[in-house]
Length: 422
Image (cartoon, rainbow, N blue to C red; front, side, top):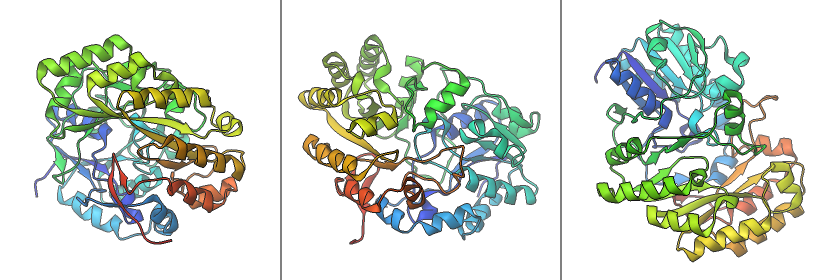
């Protein structure tokens, strides 16, 4: 095994639940670029990678949640296993991901698991740097758990952070918009590199979203990656199916979408895209731009359909907007994925109505999430599939199961799902 001065570590997350996530974390690939440009030897180690081509369903992880609780409490053989690999690189510094700041809506890492790794590494004499939106939004809680903590987005301050020139909390500053992520330092090989960012941030104030909280703290508008940088990034990805990780992809002006489509054709970049956006940002003109770009799937946040649910989530949409968006996308041959959220001050009738409504919409897939991460409370064991969090909301698990029964056996951005009979 090679040696490296720095290990950029994405700790186990789904592996603690018996599953995996083989997609490389985008923030670590940006940090890798800054380290490579500075001539610092490093690896990007995804300890959640297994190479498996199937994954357990959320129900299986929901029903077998104790192993994740144990991991947060510092128990589990994966701590020893992963540290063996990390220390084999003989690093001077380990950067530990505690959550993906660029896509803070996603379960990608847990800040408390990250802290457990940092404590073990510091006992072994290794410098640690923490990276996570949690470390910005809940700064005081994690102030002393790392030698240095990077606030906000990934940026070039990672270089003085790993060398020891900067310690403590490193204030946020925006990442430049011409940085091409580095995919040349990934360990192990075979990770999925199909997630690309073409913008950063989100301006919509959904109450459940940590991205909104993060960018409110950072006081940053939505910023668009330079078009030539987007093309260079796409060109280095071996996958033809690309998930554009922008929080609201169609927030981009139509002229930008047209320019991106034109640039893809001129460079012969034959990619197929999945994007996330909002129902109130889908129009016939936008749908035409998406077709021109090669977008084959749009994921929209329906969350819930009753007045109580929509008010609780602060989505600022209504049923007319949902139906109009789905109709427009279907008319343009674009597949639709509808997110649903469980939580808030609601009752079972709200969820029953939502479930029946989604059946009528007939989306390709229905991602389900439990409303988690109230940072004013004890959120150590929170995930978007946490039975503990669901119990805090006072919601019957059958609601979760009912939503999951809306799903197909193949998640288009994850792959085939395993399950066991209920």
